[in-house]
Length: 209
Image (cartoon, rainbow, N blue to C red; front, side):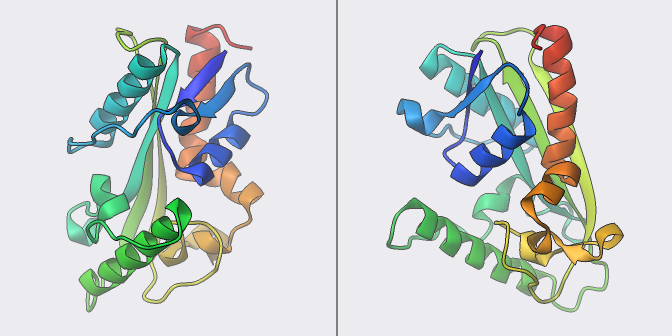
């Protein structure tokens, strides 16, 4: 089955391709099909993931899957939450999509550190919600979620990953997410937890081997 990922994020595509390896699907990005990104006007990960999956399925005529994920900080009432990708407002940078993404990440991290200045409660979690549809009007979307408990650092650590990874400390692993190898991250992350649930749902509901 060809399954369209409702994202233009190359790193997210690679991560999910690894997490779904062995399942009878071919995961392709919507960008490779010329599909633009959907609007994400909602206040919850579930609503935004559903909107993105429906958009990709409608535009492609194929089954689609969407991930809406972000960082939720207890002391900030759950922010950045669904605004995680653009927390600092949209940042323009020369050099193409990946250069812009790096500049956006840097601005988002700087704002988060400033917002948390002087706050003792550093509890946070990464949240991932995956929604898959057989077609745009599918009345039975598959919904999976994963939560990865963490604390926020006051200075970045590690050079890997993307987004807020260098500021998110996983106590049980004694490392920031940016210090984890891709293989280790793909075993324990919020997206890995959601993907494991989704694999089982696809096997049972969609009869995928």
